[in-house]
Length: 539
Ligand SMILES: Nc1ncnc2c1ncn2[C@@H]1O[C@H](COP(=O)(O)OP(=O)(O)OP(=O)(O)O)[C@@H](O)[C@H]1O
Image 1 (cartoon, rainbow, N blue to C red):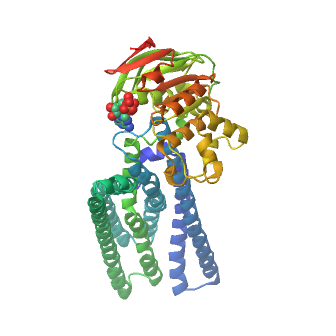
Image 2 (cartoon, rainbow, N blue to C red):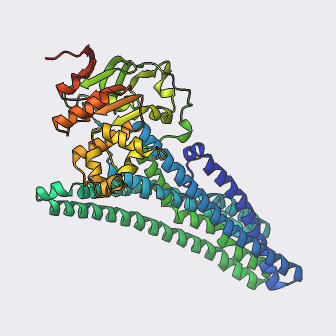
Image 3 (cartoon, protein in one colour):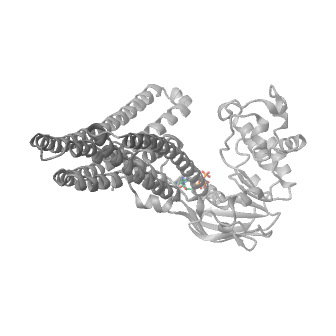
């Protein structure tokens, strides 16, 4: 049935527990419904004190069950959304973004996309046990009370189930299409905002606004189509339910007039019949939520942002020794560089060179554990990198990417990230080594100056120096630098490289500049998908 996805239940014990608890609650609810219907019929025909007390107790029990139903669904939905987001972030950390997924669409997927989990848990998943248990229980009671009425329900309930299955098949594609439009909108919007300066320079800002409008419109149309179908299926569902109730109510009325049916039984039947359809209607109303979350989970795994938290590797101690790269292949959907072999000795100086797009950054990110190797392995001493807890590896690493990200906090907060208790002299030492001390001192509030959104008030070279200070304050054993001086003048570059040379760390630096490569003992050259290792030789 569309409300239930076996893979999801296998993967998330939380959902299994929720379903079992709801099954028990649905059984209690069905018993209460039948007792209430029969009791109500008796009170209206031959009232007794005992029946009145019983009815009161059942009413209280139903209120308590309704409260618990709501609370348990909200709690399970909140916990599952949290798990999905943690998994998604772990997936992004482990594998990076795959394919053409952009930050905008992944951001939308992780926020609004994963919110669909709430509608799924509080909607079809919560309704499913009730939709299985209650119609069967009510049918049993109807057979005991009045079998001709039960026969009508036997014929009409499968019609409702068939309709739900049809709705599921039809809405599957619609939900995936609607989500794709939503992600496209998120990505277009982010691109338009972050590229505003370029667009203005090119005189294309109106054109881009028009494109965002078009995508927003496409998303609106897709949403309205899905909703139209949901409303239509609800209408058909309600019609089948009303017709079924009418098919039972009319003969019951005639039989009451004829005297072939007692008033108590007739009333009980009339109260019970709508109860057989109620949970199915609830299931049908939230049916599209099941398809929505399925589409979200498929999108998460195709962007590489879904990894099971339980899949985390154990964390053996990190052994000191060289970093050995053995027959490594790096890349994304297909390899960019293959057959890479080299050793990084502790304290050694290495340069990674090669034409633009040859795979230098990809190799650096693989060594940093940000991308999984496509083949071969990286060993730290005797331990494969894959067997080491990423957090343990991170503590030994200093990474300065090509386009470092600075957060909207202060300069100091950006540098202290992960080291909240570091002493201020360490901050100034790191800033000094990175050639950033002078300009930080000149900022309005020194290191306490807020950087604002993505630190746009700083120059590209200043941002790069802060990122270097952030790496150096951690006194890493291994320093991975991706063109760290690409935006700096020669004097600043020389000062920074001198400071880096004085560090005891193993340093691997990606560079296009011969004078930076000249500082390394060993040069790893990547070209045509292959890596070659040589001693530095000036041309
Ligand atoms: N997220 C990604 N998904 C798919 N392919 C990617 C991704 N990132 C990079 N690539 C591709 O991998 C190849 C290597 O890119 P990489 O950034 O490693 O090159 P590079 O040698 O560092 O280049 P440069 O010197 O210009 O920085 C390129 O062809 C690039 O298009």
